[in-house]
Length: 144
Image (cartoon, rainbow, N blue to C red; front, side, top):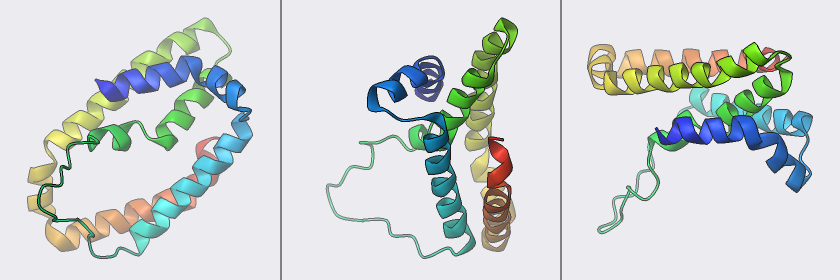
């Protein structure tokens, strides 16, 4: 629900927020591209997990689902979709598309434990490398 609300707010007020800070859509596209490529490179060259196990440290401060489903790439995408919508019908379909995307993410995350058990370590490495390759190779066409 939080991801849906964040994406809706950015979809319809993102251009105003950018205006306040003097950020242009092309500059945000470039920043989003750099971020996505850096994540893709990290996926192609995974390192050991660096999870802190200090006593008393709470991992609940920042919910895990929030940055994954409404991060910079998602925010960039919804702002660009709204800025490129030429008709009212196109603009009105954006909240439905956001809802479907968030719902699909929820379903995938809900059933991911079974998928992880089925794929095991080698399968997960293949999926991660394939996704990283896809993200790095298709970045130029995502927002064009």
